[in-house]
Image (cartoon, rainbow, N blue to C red; front, side, top):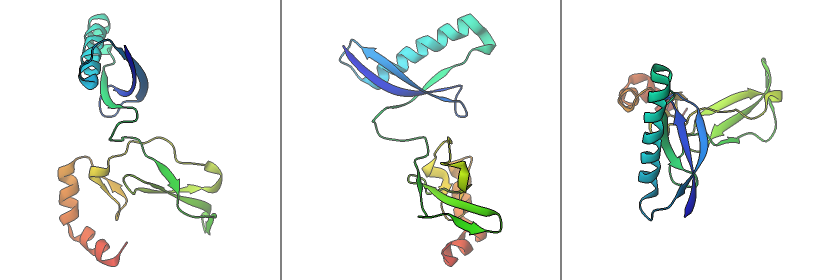
Length: 149
């Protein structure tokens, strides 16, 4: 038997993440086994709760490749003072998104990371890859890119 930890998401794309464990008796593909177990779980949820069922979907193995949660790190060494007060600049190491957080608020929390559709120049996350591609071809993005923002 092999115990493996994985992350699942409740109710699709906008749902919350859950750390879970799965014990596998078989020597097959772990991801396939986990997805099959989640499908069985979802069928039982549907049977019990109908429209109120909370479906779970496989995201990734813990320690595996691919990340979907921001990995924030502090950019500045000390607080930056401006007219709004003192703040720190935080950046996600995966998608390069930045956040300005007031000095006492601490580390940015939560948030889904989508490096494939995040524009680090404009600091925006797009709903789809197609929208991101259109944005990269737009005048405003090209001007910002030339300025080096």
